[in-house]
Each structure stands twice: as C-alpha cells, then as structure tokens.
Amino acid sequence: MDALRYAVNTIKQKIPKRILEAVFLPKEYYQLRRAPYMANNIDDEIINKVIMGRVRHDCNTAGAQEVTIPLRTVNPEFIDNDKYVYHIPKQLTGGRTITSAISVILYSMGNISSGLDGFLGTNSIGMSTCDIGTMNPVKAVGNAYSPQVAVETTNVRVIGDNMVLVQDLVGPGGDRHLRCMVSHDAQFSNLDPTTWKAFAQLCVLACKAYIYNDLVIEMDTAQIHAGHELNAFKDRVESYADADDLYEEYYNEKWRKIQYFSDKPRYARFVSSLIGRYK
Image (cartoon, rainbow, N blue to C red; front, side, top):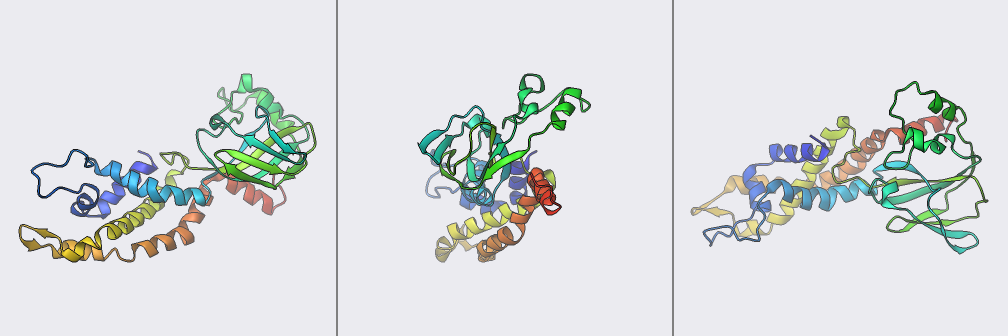
C-alpha cells in the first residue's frame, strides 16, 4: 500500500461505482461489446486523468520535497563571467524533476562525510548514508568536521528540464551544493503515511470536479437506462457542482501546509532558522 493506491481506494469508496464507470469506462450503448480502444481499468483511468493529470501537477507546484544536491561531479556550462548553467543528471535527483531552485551553496571545506562515499555509500540523491549501524565512528568523525557555509547565492532559477541558471559570482574552490525543490515520484513515496488521508481527500475532490465537468453537459439529455430516467444518478452528479471550488480551497488552505510539514528535513531547517541555527 502506498499513497497513490490509498487515494484510489478512497475515491472508489466515496463515489458510486456506476458514476465512476460512466466517466472512466464509457460504453458504446449501440454495440454489443465495448469498443477495443476503450479503457478497461477504472483504477488506471483515475490515476492518469485525475491524480497525474491534475493533483500531481498542483502538488509539485507547491514544492514536493526539498533536497540538497552535491555538484562536485557536475561541470557547469559558463555563459558569462557571472552566469553559468548546471545540467543536473536525473540520477542525482532520484529520477525526479527539479521544480524550483532555492540557492547554490559554497562550503569552506570539502564535505568529509561525502569524501567517504566508498565506505559510507550514497543514496539516490547523492547524500551520504551508512548501513552498518548507528554507532559508526568514521561517520561520527565526519559529522564532527561538518563544513561551514562560506557563500550562498539565491540568484538561481530553473530554465529547463533539470537545468539551473546561476547568475552570481561565486569564488573558486570549496564544495558546491544546489538546494532545490523536486517533484513527487509516480507513487508519491516521499509522503509520510500520516498524510495519506489528507492526500486522499484532495484526490476525491479532484475526481468529483472531473466527473461533474465530464457529465454536466451530457446530463442535459438525461441519463436513460431501460427507458427510465436515472434521477439518483443525476442528483448525485449535480451535488459535485462545487467540487472544483472545494478542491482549490482545500489545496490552498490545508494541503500546502500538510505537504510542507511532511517534508521533515525542510521543516527541521525552518525550525532551526527560528532559533538561529539554519544551515
């Protein structure tokens, strides 16, 4: 079970099956069988048209996850004396897209912990890891000599797919890192399980808005089955008329905050900044 599957299951529990079938599995009523090009899986259609089509884009816009990417293996493309571009490989972002750049940091000394990559290992975004226990003496020494920020510039912006433009003069030497926001992966795996219910609610509202927009015109001719108008069907769909407004309200007033607090490293740095220990 992941956040994506939890959201789909919640949608299927909250919205009647007949309505979901009418929208995501439309039938050719004048044929004896479903046309071969028609979708045959409600779950996949909900994921593609609702969650990936709208929810994921909105979540990425709010900033999915903040990461710090080491740039020691990335050679910049110099445009001018104080302008250069970094082309960030997807393996440094875990296959995800950089949605916004925050700053480029120049440390005053090499990161000792990252210099021990052969022993400690690295994760999908290039950060040092250790898998041989919490009381690792080498890691402890590395942490004791953690680098200090010498220069940090916020004159950075995304200009293409994982392309970051830096417009500032940063001195030579040191160990450069890019602090940036990256997108959610396809499974929203970075979401803490405590946020799944709130995420599912966002997806339910998005699905109701999609259903209303898809059926509101068609219902003018009425949903007819065996010669009888399906009043319950029409009434339920019409009750979704304000779903889009509710989605926008929930997204702006609740979800953006929930997503922010679920990003533990970013929230920890925010708290540290309040007491003068931001880094």
